[in-house]
Length: 390
Image (cartoon, rainbow, N blue to C red):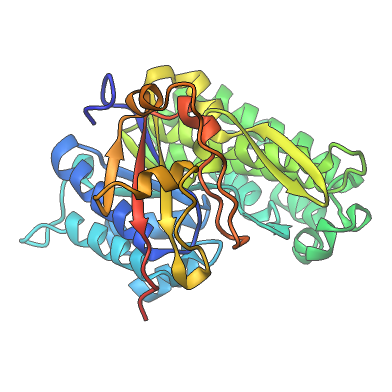
């Protein structure tokens, strides 16, 4: 925290690769310290924002069982992680006082996913978000104000599998994202969100803060998903760039909403949290788009802080000692097993000499790009990532 000018509303901790519990253990340790010493109450990770509500219900009120939560509350396979399981268990235990009455609501830890309901090869149907938003409004405002009935939404949505077909990623013609039904749904989603905003004074006064926040989440998710499906059906050269950008835009909107309540620790891939443009190669084409971190930093300024993580070895994945002329190689020469580095001081020390980018032999590992040093507030370096726990 001493690296930062003030306590940020969003403190983002990046990781250069997914699936390593060593890095998640580090995240868990940091979150515990932030809770106990800095008053942080919310952790959000790169996981489905709608599924994350299942985890939040469990840690705040004990709804469901830990096994059910790990199965239903995470996307991208994160529920299988031992470190994620320990995180959820600890958060629930923290929210239960010794007398089992539970902590006051203002002191409870909260969990959130901030990714859209998206996987690499498919996107969810907008049904859950759209129907939840419609249901919230239908129970609280005059029926004549609603732009449609629940039956109309159901008819336009049709079968969910036409939205989730993985063949769409490779063949835009298979997508329903630009069909007449989808176009009508986008207009209705916009109208429902507009009605939510128009009725805000009444709704905020007559419903709980949690219900209001969830209704806004339903609106963001419905419009974001319909936009994502629209670009899934696109055949222009901009298709993949727009899909990547749409995902990070959904992430940014969710992060900004979370920051309105409490200071938040954010954990995701470095590429989503950095202040510079994100990039990747797909099908021989280099794609570039503004990351969620860049979008949030543009809005929050110094109230957004980004700490990148760089790694030395992941030998069980074939990632061996980094070459000495790379950033990771220079840091690997330090005696510490892990450390936090002041980026401005590191940049001054390097001077005009910029380390070479590290080339990884493993597709799943994205080394930290030294060209992005100026966009970080600090770097966490982990020297060696041991083999995964059984």
